[in-house]
Image 1 (cartoon, rainbow, N blue to C red):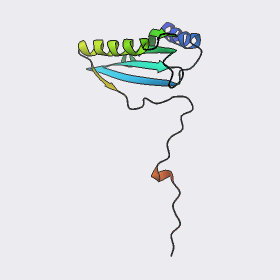
Image 2 (tube, rainbow, N blue to C red):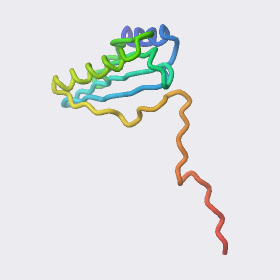
Image 3 (tube, rainbow, N blue to C red):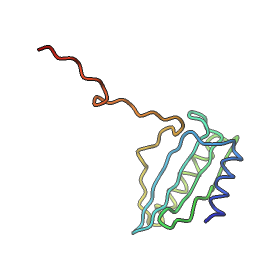
Image 4 (spheres, one colour):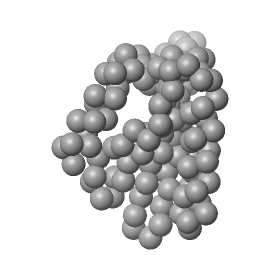
Length: 121
């Protein structure tokens, strides 16, 4: 487990640091879970990118399956192929709703956050 975590951290460092945006798919079968994550270093930029794969229900850490620094579309194709492969093996996969930029996120204001307007008596 420590080796996989170390490899994942080294992979992030090798590509220049943290990734700013990710698309995540979670797949389940019985009590098992798999997470596949397509990560980009900069929002709106196709490269550099990487595909992370983890087995949270088994606490095995994360693997970086593929990465690209120059070829736009490479990560997207590998991501879709891998998720399709898991589905073909009987896994139930769904995209997470939180596929948004990760760096310096600020929550969006809602009506509940707005100050109340003064009322006239």
